View (tube, rainbow, N blue to C red):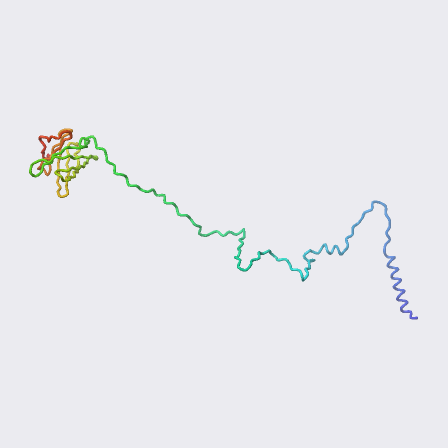
Length: 227
């Protein structure tokens, strides 16, 4: 018999016996028993490994998209999502025009000034006698309107329309002005000899007088201006 295999077998048996003797025997002890939880090494390795490293998706699985994006069918309008932190302010904002605040100017109505005290006696309707070129007198009525130191009036003499305009002297007892028709014109002068009577002339030649209360011509109708 070959001794070499036997010696190898005896060595293995010896080593096995020595290994069992090297393990310490569990000895009993008195006191409170403390249980020690030992974590297997395999579980410790799994705990220290991040989940991302342990995740190995199968080639048949579809990985999740990094970001959810809406799905648009062909022909859909593009949807633009603004970042809430961004603002799209219009660099040229619309500024409504300012209303026109200028007031509308209305022309002042013509105000007729009341006659002053020294001119008020001339205001009103007068029966007048207007001497013509033949020397006779034409009778009519003129309505005199006084405005301050000025006056105006109209009359129809021998079927012809006349206009009279003039001014008073500061004392208010004399008046002078111009008369006109459609074809003629001239000038006149009056002097008040009573509150209701005046005498005078036209063109410094013909008589021109008037009375407020009487239709009888004054005896001294014709009087030339005092120079």
